Length: 315
Image 1 (cartoon, rainbow, N blue to C red):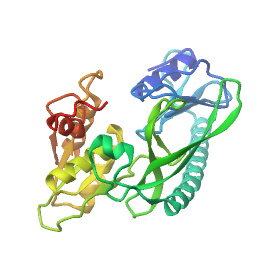
Image 2 (image 1 turned 30 degrees about the horizontal axis):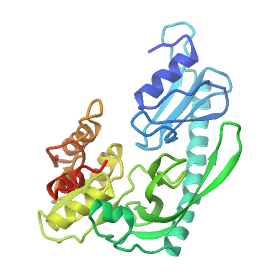
Image 3 (image 1 turned 180 degrees about the horizontal axis):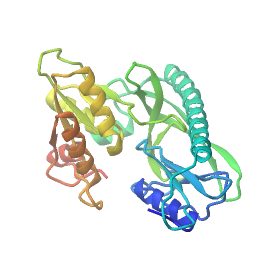
């Protein structure tokens, strides 16, 4: 599609990635934006308009998806010149190098935090609320730098955070997820990812493999769901952490376990437009030759287990 105004091109790219628009599109700087399917202030996206005002780039860090967008003043698409293609390629390589460097630094920080943490106790408030066991989760102190509207920065320190590692396919810890004892009043959520740690294709798991031909393995979004499914079925359960990461994790599992029966345990997001949990799980299953299981109520399989146990629905 051709655009006469760079703001229109930027908005279209953001919509494709499920990201909100910033208040302005100041050229030559990254703007932090929220994912539409997350809590306010989640900061899951980035967008930058190039200094010349003729193009830009945005990325959804939750899903790993990226888009470039460009301005066409003639309203008809024209082929890029060699010089323009070279400039775009330089920008792309620069962005990739910057992102890779930040993720490498985050991976070192993740490993340090993980090694300093201790085994999580079974009576941690989150585990008690979800009626699950720790399954190797650890307990530590979580720090997050925040910035107010005036640009002032401060460090939040959250004690007794559950820590979950995010591994890449080589078995290296690349990031962490923290789960707080309760919803944090400033962050307005009870979970957080390590800044710049990346997510696409990263995962964790609960349970051991059977190493039998045609074994069944499950792939779910969150820790509580994975723990519940493992405790109920005995199967190994991989965590993708978000619906948008299910496909990437499914491909990793299929490559490593070509004969496995892969079941995507979808979140049933009936109260969200398009039911992203079920939609993304169905797309992932079709791509890797798997199947889909979904709870018969709104929510995930942990919500369903709590419902069966008479404990209500834990949002």
